[in-house]
Image 1 (cartoon, helix red, strand yellow):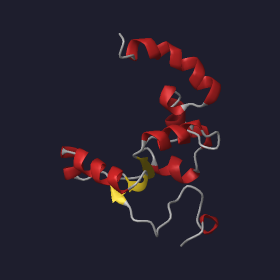
Image 2 (cartoon, helix red, strand yellow):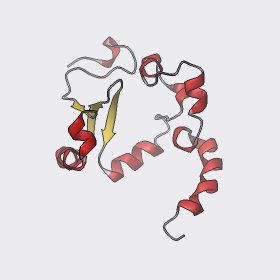
Image 3 (cartoon, one colour):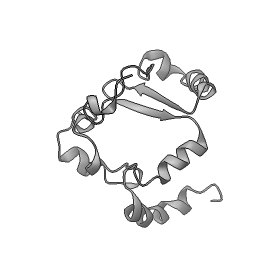
Length: 124
């Protein structure tokens, strides 16, 4: 197995089986693939057309990851590899446009969340 110290930060381990999430069959009906992945385990390396990523298929695992302070959604902390491949838009514009509720952490997220929580709630 390849050690993460031997490859640039943000690049996936090539020894793990990867799932491509970008072909026509995936876009037509992704539910069968998601069920297959969920049945196989909670965490999967996946590929989109230009980005390597991790797909979490278990609610409790996803919740734990989102609460882990070592994990960030903020593009300011992304690897150069991610920033180079994540968008056709150049930096810094790409990262500046990603400052919204889904891509911020901690206090910034806590400030934004109440603004959308009630309108998006099931009770509404």
